[in-house]
Image 1 (spheres, rainbow over the protein chains, first blue to last red):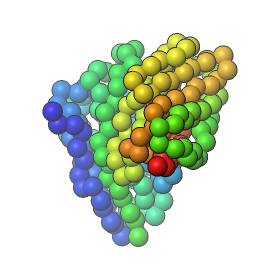
Image 2 (image 1 turned 90 degrees about the vertical axis):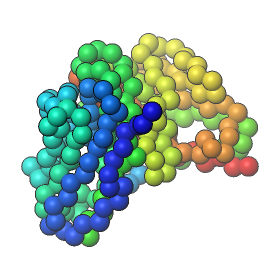
Image 3 (image 1 turned 45 degrees about the vertical axis):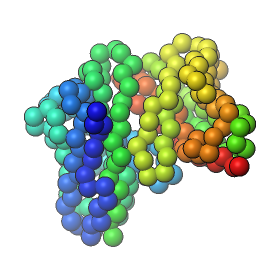
Image 4 (image 1 turned 135 degrees about the horizontal axis):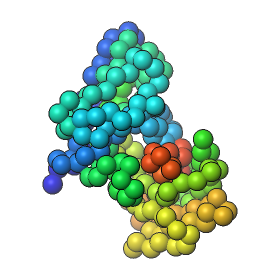
Length: 118
Length: 109
């Protein structure tokens, strides 16, 4: 079956531009996560959705970052007025059950979007 | 917070065994995960430990000692395709995954 897909795979933006990154999770997965991975580092948590509800956005680095999942499936991460420090790979992951259900549910990752801000 | 430390790089020969250590400092966590990430690709799940001890999955095994704040991933019968980054991650008590910086393993013929 299809895994998690993300688009675009690569995005180059000029400083100050707005960007939108899309994530298609595995069908039926309740939980959706966004991570930011800088070069040579591990992924860092940005935000979490349970269906359409954004339950945790504590990892978003600034108010220029906004995420939504309006129908509980596809999610979009939007970055306004991009800065050079936003350059990173943005990973999306989904899992079958609610995050806080207590189960150690595997997170399935997408291939990521590599954002370069010039 | 959680300080998760892994070696930056390791090199090993095809057919050999490599052990990747992960140490951490945290007040409590629900589980410790290991992920493999090939360059430019998504992290893929390898194993997880909840209780102390060894979990074996084919050529890969993972060990956890909560009292020592220590885990390792053991890769046996190394193959060229095992060249990748290996990420240690803690699932915190509020169910967030926190990753280490990863260990890049290079397998040489």
